[in-house]
Amino acid sequence: MAILDFIKKQFIDIIEWTDDSRDTLSYRFPDEDKEIKNGAQLIVRESQVAQFVYLGQFGDSFGPGKYTLTTDNIPILTDLKGWKYGLESPFKADVYYVVTRLFTGNKWGTANPVMMRDADFGVVRLRAYGTYDFRIVDPKRFLKEVAGTDDHFRLDEFADAMRSRIVSVFSDALAAAKIPALDVASRYTELGDALLPLINPAIGAKYGLEMTTFIVENVSVPPEVEQAIDKRSSMAAVGNLNDYVKFQMAQGLEKGGGGPGGMAAEMAVGMAMAQQMLQQTGGITAQSTPGVSGPASPAVPPMLYTPAQVAQMLGVSEADVVASLDSGDLKGKKIGTQWRVTRGAVDAFLNG
Image 1 (cartoon, rainbow, N blue to C red):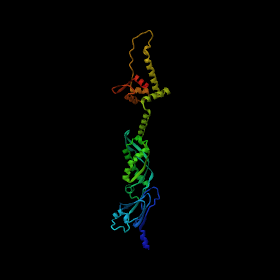
Image 2: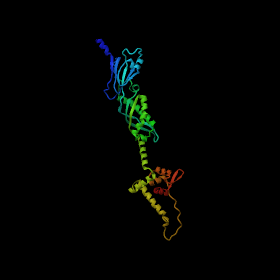
Image 3: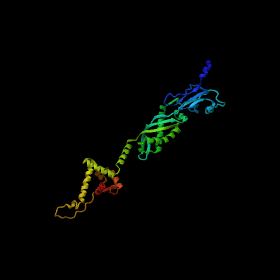
Image 4: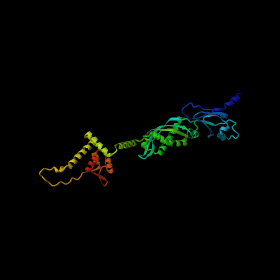
């Protein structure tokens, strides 16, 4: 009897695994160098898949349920072992349990900036991070490409192994989606939804995984791109340059002589007063000494200003003045490559 008991202990009667953790992805059943006997019981619980591996080759797979291991229900293993007359003797094989439930709240992030070609800013560098939920949908591919022969493959090992791979897939998907940097930095929820259909085929084919949720929590761009975005927002807020200049003048008049806006406003008021005096009957030239008649004064040619001088008068940048000249809002004459503006054109622009 002692010998029979000893022999029985050398064979595995029941194969089962109860997951007592919340972070296990795959687990190899500890056979302790024992063989699986004919008719052994295999128990697979919900959210588990049992995968047989024989000499490095994948055998049969079993979903949730209770099975009696015979030749009929392990055809792949039977073929691999070359059992011609059925399963009659004990055999050795590795049994891996793969967890198929949903793993939530996993973090991802770019350790280094991701290079991206953008229609607005050219090539930009983006940093991003967020969370994702995933499950294993192809146990064989997962064991082959991710877990390998690890006896107990946990979530922390997965995060270390997959972080760079997920970032790589994210970069490829972002490039394929062609989402502008301005939208990337402001539409996180829509970005995640747009990238998910591009990410899943890649990780499914490579690693046997499926992401159910991919959330982008933050995307940061370099400081120079942030400045460009702020400048574009300011330009959109300004709108029409003509209205902006009038607003600057009004602000200058309200504040008095302080600052460029006030100086521009005072200069513009002075010019307007001078223009009104010139437009009066006889103008300033008619105010000669009574009783003394002299030759008629020649017409005073209009004063010409450069864009820089006009910009100083209006309290704006020279580039804004040139833009107004190019668009025709401010009338001027181009002599070669240089603009010249009359005082009347400046007055007409201010009063327009």
